[in-house]
Image (cartoon, rainbow, N blue to C red; front, top):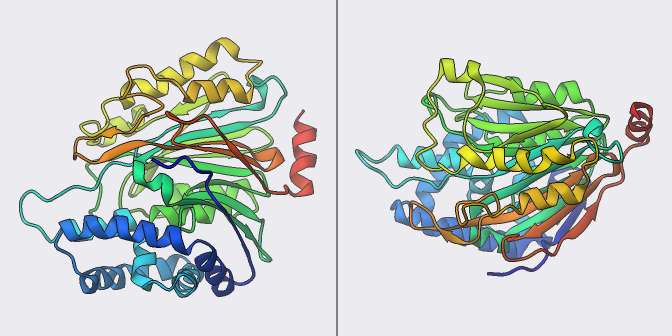
Length: 381
């Protein structure tokens, strides 16, 4: 597999203009991502016309959430010279594929679980009094060749930077206001009872927020189609983990300045109200979050980014490990920790390593933080 650095895509201007610029710069990787998911759609016996019909069914939900996202996706499609429906699929993959699966009677091919192990270290637990936020993104190994780092310069809010599949509007990332987000797969018995806003667009909306409270509101109150875990941090020193059901969110907070999460519900309130149906796909989740925390705890009060890096490199019980080497999953597809993403929001720094189980080379990407964020971070010290 390729271990080339993820390309930086830098855009600005109104939604259509920046979408076109994004599409032109990332055309090859967008085409690669579309080709990859097209194979999956073909396994479901879906034609291009079928996909277009599914997108049309989902489009009103996206437009109702933010019509500019549709405009930006149309720009991406124009710039990359690919069908709009394909770009929409990249941004609502999980939700649209579930619509496709509903066409089948009885057993249907299942979409792979999107794994991940995430962590936040608050300033009081670090050596230099700064917040760290990191994640391993566990997904299809081929996506190491179709992901990018997208930097968006905005006139109507803070600039943002996100690691995402090419053509996607957002995944994990940070913004110039000091807000950062990562996300992890969850599954519950409430999933897909009603349509909701695509998860990728919720994450993008968080990164567009100038205020932490508004970012939290986006995660906690936006209706979703399925469960998902989202960790939202703030550079001056705060983080909340939201275990989201489609219609409800359950909060978890750091303990002794450390927050870790993998792919199963741990909130007692959540577990009293719903059934976790995802562990059949990710049984290793039961120890991955604890492994990261256990490796960090001896260093609480003096944790550095290197400590977090090494914790996320953990290979305990490999290949079912925090840092997952390429291996077959339960569906027979090649799965891996596609990327390790490490962020220091106060400085606007993101370090990313592709396929970290076989590669320890990081590329550093930077986003100039806003002056008020730096002032608040200094005041917190």
